Image (cartoon, rainbow, N blue to C red; front, side, top):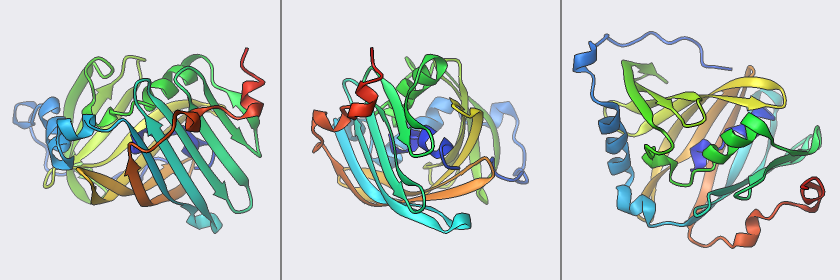
Length: 253
């Protein structure tokens, strides 16, 4: 779930520079995309371990090295229905928050004020809130295909096309050696237009029954931001955590 938090980055943070591809393989030599995804799920603890959790709370730090800015970050997620809340306080900017309460998507920042998500942006936010996104449920991700074996973040990876029910095509990269997801390239609608974000995942650590990426580097609009998690807890989030703030409630009709 953590790695599906894409739109907050758009409020702050360019695709990676082109990387030389590894030795090309023919389509018949490439593993099936579902096999690659299932290998990742097994590597992080297995399908049952993923489905065993109903909520998640993570704390950490967000930094923008090029601008010397950083601050604390909190991520909340829950299932049934899928919900998410991401909050961070960035030096020189203030508090930035984004949420989805199961029905309404919203964002707040000192630059934009309170805003409700509508249309395509709202439908994308709903899918990004998928608490069990690691599984790439065929009902939400009906088309997956292994595109190629290539280099990503300096590692041989399988590039997998992921087409969602909202029509958006993302690309996931899975480490050939470990099976773990190395990162992704996502395209989303935002108040600033269509944005493409590259995320690099790493520093995988065991948290209870699951292995979790504790560090993510995201690049958007030529700006790099780093997310470093310090704690992750499961099944200890109250439903009230996802209630929109008063300024957002005032916009909901």
